[in-house]
Image (cartoon, rainbow, N blue to C red; front, side, top):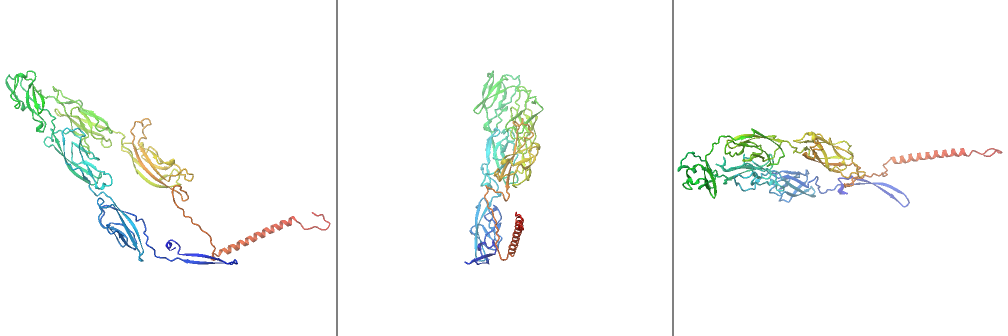
Length: 622
C-alpha cells in the first residue's frame, strides 16, 4: 500500500469476527496505521513538447518545473542548461535555417534521499520570418529588339526566402521605378512588354538602355524585401525604309543639275548598319532623259520631273519616287471630338473595347499614326490601355475593377499634326466580388439538451460584399448538417444572421450518432435576382466553416466514444460504537409484540361472537 499513501486514508479499522466450535462468537476492531515511505520524484504537468522561436535571445527560459529538487540535464552537448529551481534556459541564439529543428533533453530530478526520476523533453525550434528574400536570378542585363509584341516575356525573375524552406515560397514582385514599357507579374516574377518600344523615338533614340528596380517581398505589406537593378538594352531593327523629300520647279531646263539625292534621303533606323544606302539606277517612263552621276554621289541631272530612282539599301532594293511634293496644309480631324466606351469590368485582358478614327484632307492622304499621350494608368499599372498605331483599335492590358476605378480618361493623338481627342472608358459594374464573412471559421460546444430555437452560443455571422446590396445575401448549409439540426435565421435578405438549433438531438433512440458536426456554410449574393434570371446572372459565393461539439449529459450512453464510469458502493457494517442499533432492534420488537397482541384480541372477540355459552336444561339447542 505504500505507493498509494498520498491518495488513500492514513488508517483503516478492521473488524475481526471469531467463532468457536460451540457457536460462541466475539467481535473486535483492529486499527491499521499506514506509514509514509520516501518514493521517487514524479514530474507534474506536460513536459513532453516545448516550443521556442528561431532567433530567440540567449538564456531564453522555456519552462519551469517549480520544485525544490536538484535537477540535471543530459546530453551535455545540447545548447541548454537547467537551474536549481528547474527552469530550462538556452545557451545560444537559435537560427532555424542553420540549427537542428528539434532537441531531446533528458531531465533528471533527485530528492534529498537520492531517489530520482528522468523525463524526456522535446524542444522544437519554431521558424519565424526573420530572413530577407534573395534573388536567384543572376542575369542583370537583357537584350530585346524594338517593336516587340505586347505581352512578350523579357525575363523571368526568381527569388527564394530562407524562411520558406519547408513550404512553397509566397513572394511578391514589383517594379519600383516608373516605367512605361514593362510590367512584372506580382506572383510569378515574369517581366513582360506592356508598351510600344520604338528605338527611333525619344528618349530611346539617344539612350537605348532602360533600367528598372525590381523588388521582392515576403509579405504584401510590412515584410522583408530585397531589390536589384536590371538593364534592358533595346536593339535596333531595320524597320524603316529610306525616305526622300525632293522638289523641283516645273520649268527646269533640260540638262540642268537638278539635285543631290543625299541631301534629301534619310533612313530613320538608329544603327548605322541599318541606315546606309546607295543609288543603283534609274527606271520609269522617260528615265532615258535623266542621268545619275554615280551610284554613291546621288547627283541627278534631269530633263523631266517624274521619274523613279532605284535605291539600294544593303541587300534590299528599295524604290523611291522623286516628285513634286504637295504641301501638308490640312490637320487630321477625328470623327468625334471625344469617344466614350462602356466596358464590363470582367472583360478579358487583350480585348478590343473600341476604335478611334481620324481623316486627313491632304492629297495624297497622309499616313496617320495613333498613340496615347496622357492618362490611361493607375497606381498599379502605368498603361492599362493600348492603341493600334495604324488602325486606332483600343485594347485593355490589365483587368478592370469597378470597385477601384469606375472611369478612365485618356488622350489619343493623331500624329500628322498632333491633333488629339479624349477617350473616356466607363467601367460597368459586374457582380465579380464574393461575399466576405466574419468570422469565417468558428468552433464551439453545446449541451445535448439545448432547447430548440436557441441562438447557439450567441453566434452571429456578418458579411460584406463590395458590389452587392446587403439584402442580396442568402445563407444555407451545404455539408455536415446531419438530420438538419442547424439553420440560419434570417436565411436571406440581410448581411447578418444567427445560427439556430432547428431540432433536438436524439441519441437514446439511435437517430443521432454524430457528436461532432462540421458545417460548411455557403453565402450567395443572388437573393434579389429573380428565379428566371439566376441561370444567366453571375453569382458569387462565400464560405464559412463551423465546428460544433455536442456535450452529452452524465447519464447519456455514448456507444461510439470510449470512456469509463466510476461507481461508488457503500455497505452498512455493524460496529459496537453504533449505539442506535440495539435501540432500533428493541423498539422494533416491542412494536411487533404489540401488533401480535392486538391481532390475538381481535381473534378472541370474533370466536366469542360465533360460539355463545351453553343454555339451561330443557332449552332448545341451537
